[in-house]
Length: 144
Image (cartoon, rainbow, N blue to C red; front, side):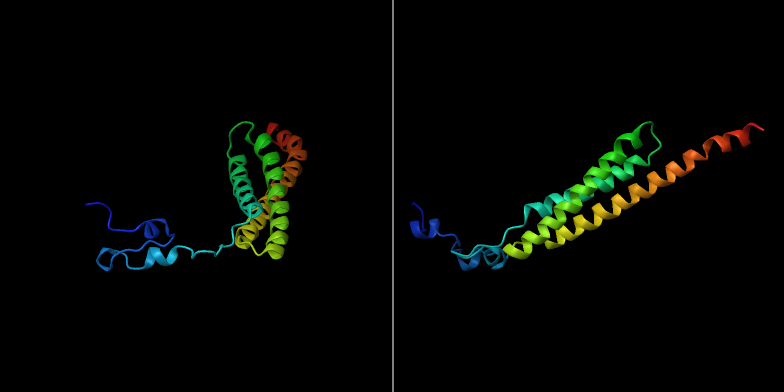
């Protein structure tokens, strides 16, 4: 009757599993941290930078859809989110270097996505303004 394991085994962070009850071997037990060891956590600024970079890319993609007024909302949103991704990526890279946290790949990805999408938004806005100034002449040619 009762439990076969002692209280010490139940409260220990690494479970003691009988040899026959290991369907996956020692894989899951090896993945558990040892007592007293602390794994470095992922930098939150890097995660925010990456999320802002992905949202910037989504805003750019939505802005070029030919629905009314999507450009008026999505291009400014892409500019703000791109700036957040770039600033957050730079801050997180500095924090990661000084603290030893994980997340440098997220920070670099956020920088790349935010910077690339911000550059694309600027190019699209400049192209639209250039074509907008030539629109009356093009309409005049179509009327003739």
